[in-house]
Length: 437
Image 1 (cartoon, rainbow, N blue to C red):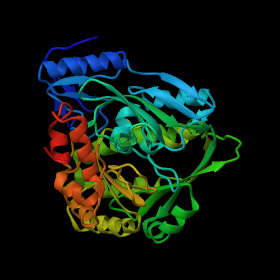
Image 2 (spheres, helix red, strand yellow):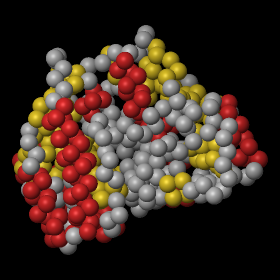
Image 3 (cartoon, rainbow, N blue to C red):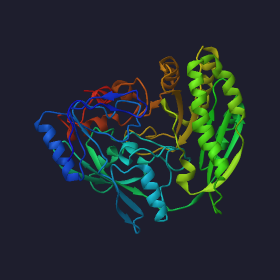
Image 4 (cartoon, rainbow, N blue to C red):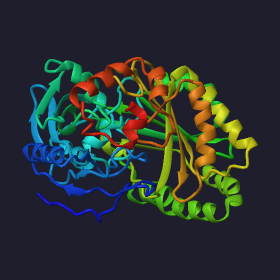
């Protein structure tokens, strides 16, 4: 196992969180991970596993033992009878997606970024958009985790079901996940239809757009009345991926290269943002293409940003978004990043943002290095007035007292944490804030 001394600084993807662990460990097996937990306990150190650092919160930060998952990767087993795949916790989603595609399989739904590890993505409740299909964690059929006493616990609906009910989105508070079993299905085709649409039209027709499409989302460009809509639906084919040039223009030049330049200009001269937004939001054109799921659901994100996202009861989302629009219009704020709206069906995971309620999400972003506090604080005020639940891996200021109000099963989770980690081996400052001492 590789170790490290205390002068290593860990940084997250957005660069807004840093930590200085006492040591780093890269276990190559669940047994080595259990040994690292045992040694940490002997030395009186806390333990945190880190993924690729895609969280904007300090969820993975520690001054104790930092577990790096780089050697805990790969597919353990594909069970075609049960239609499941079991993967090591550190496997990046992009590797899982590509490996499944080679086997003629796919996850049912996924988020739009696939840099994260499977454990990091699920532990924080990462999701895409879906009318009937839910977050990545909701597709979990089984979990294996090393608990505070260094034992290996497996859980599913049949085995340790009370742990399974909570640990699928466990925030790293219940133990270190070592492997995950996902439900999979035969690979299918999705037809993506991207189309600009006026803000007033999208919001007026939101209920129909949601009901008529398996995966609907839209982006509103602040300082404009323009949106871009995305509808992804299953298709009989044939596959018709975007042309290489047009795909590059939309996905690389517009979304990464040009966008980087625009954001940099906006950061340097904020007054230019509204006029740039009007031009760039009108430059979008409609396009339709058909491909396998991960090539449709995901896209590269190379422009670094910070993000806050709140989950609201679905019926509240249009009203809340209109409040955000009014806020931007009457304030001196200059916002270069679009506001993203997605949906999820209710699920049965204790701390899922969609736990027990039909959900819609509003995500706001700011370019890395731009002051975001004023914007995020004002948006958060709107979201909390609607009993919003913040994404566990994105910027928010909520604490355990707030979560006890908006999550009916919050006490169930904290009681399980008390049982599995009474000495708080897996605690850090973030968990103390969101779960209590």
